[in-house]
Length: 170
Figure 1 (cartoon, one colour):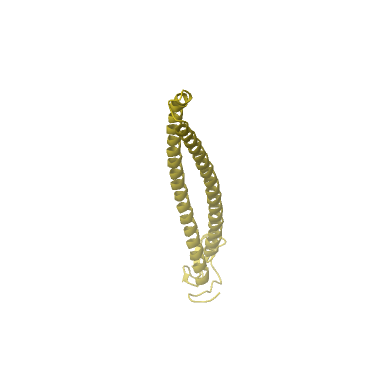
Figure 2 (spheres, rainbow, N blue to C red):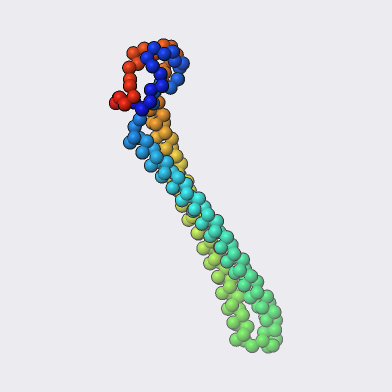
């Protein structure tokens, strides 16, 4: 018994707190669970931040790749009619064609990579959220156990045969 709030013979209301019990092991366990929940939530926030940073970096890279494709396409469109009339050397035009194809392939690979990364990170984030929800539930149960250490009056009336003392083990 940690704290005695009423004496034997006192009038009490239903649900009134009569005494508080102490259980150091339960309190430490609850604190450990609370710490686990906070760590998991922090991990989830860090993962969300990393996901957003990755999305932005991928988007920037894709925009740059789109720009390179547009430049290569413009050069190709300028050189194609000139190459047909012999005003651009065959090797130079083939290099332009190869560059356009390479830039288009690069863009495609970047877009596929970004989609794959997004899918994997979203899956990981969902797992972290599920774990955090489970830990929150566990923490709620532990807090409920802590609340059970508070002795309350089951009904209103006069308290009789209430003979507990501070320091007593139950």
